[in-house]
Length: 293
Image 1 (spheres, rainbow, N blue to C red):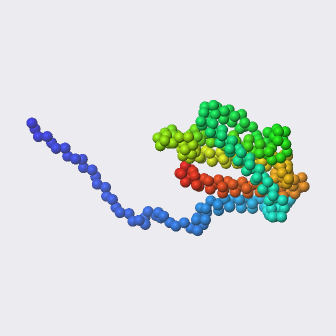
Image 2 (image 1 turned 45 degrees about the vertical axis):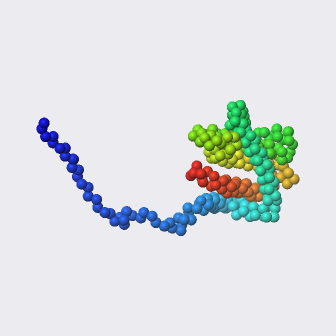
Image 3 (image 1 turned 90 degrees about the vertical axis):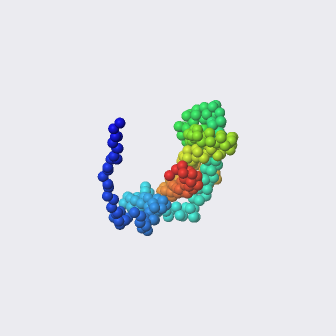
């Protein structure tokens, strides 16, 4: 046998690597300036937005020069302070919030019952799906005439329309969140021996909480708008009435600044609930769990 030539390894060209000074990379990390640190605060950016709207409001009202139609922002703030500190605005706000909390709480309780039935039985699932398709598109304010016939002029009528506005939005979002829980999480909970209430509390609710929280926000917004609209329609729900009645009453008196003060109260409460209460819930739940950016 002849000699077998050894296979020589392929010679590859060498690459010359030169060291690059760190200064040539540019600025990898630098401390933020004072302006950048302040601008990174969410509250500051939102304050800038609100302040810009207030300035635009003031300038346009000064240009229009018609306080009856569109009073300046400074005049509205003054009317808000006087009505809140010395007038009836604080009492009207408490009346509205009391009715709102009663209706919102009842709506959440009924939504929990319907959702529990829906995730437990097929009949409950069909029941919730059918009722949601029927009543969710129906505006709550459209039921106001029936509420007046059934419950009379008072708080029960307001609670009824608020429950309608809250119930279907919260139940639908909660049920959708439960259905979207992955089979992997469900089997993990079953492997740990979780059943019944422990299974729902430890597996289903945390996994579906983004949808539940979205339903709570939507239900809150629907309840707030429905209550103000209902008070505007039939006015006094208690001895002094609520915010809607305050707005309607001042409109009849042509006190436009007070009308805007009532609207400003509605906006401030909405901003507080959304920016403080719901944001705190998000920070301690879905953001802490890494489920939301």
